Length: 277
Image 1: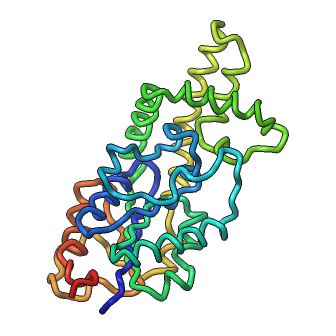
Image 2 (image 1 turned 180 degrees about the horizontal axis):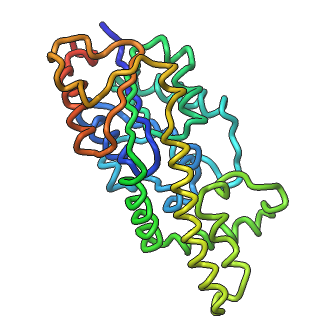
């Protein structure tokens, strides 16, 4: 019997990877393995846009919430953990759904021999910055409403308690949002300066998030790793044509609706291929 394949959903922050990954996992009897260098920490759930229990929608998620704030795992440590989780999910006769945007982790993981020798389907969600930028700004405003400032204040107190500032920037304190907001916690919180620094920090967080996503959204290194097939043309293919090849790269529009439509034609219509035939 064919072994269960691996599906990877990769793309920049705020593009809808979490929703797509969960939808695929529910449709294909899969489990999500997070490939994110910051969601591994127990702290900073709002700042790192960690999926909530509601967003997980009953789907098992791995490699989230398992490190202390000041731990700094190597890339090889993470890759080893991810491969073990892939094996665990496949042993349960389920499909591993890798979801993430950290290129420092996805590239070594997807190119690892234990992954490359299996049936690997990679979906790269992309978007133009003109459309994604306003969504990123709105997302940060939503984070503020969810308690981002209280979370950043907790991280500031934790940093002082552990004397982390003496060790350089590492761990959860690398997350976009903390360096930008940190100055406002150094002054009297009832002072006008505090509120000015807070507003400036939020504005800087929006700018730095856009810059980060712009860099993250460039995927030439993936094009060297996989065959490329334009996702916007996939729906014209016959259902039984050889759409799923090893290894394969799908570049598709960065909206949940269009991405799910393409995935429906690409993957969800081939359920017998996923170890059931």
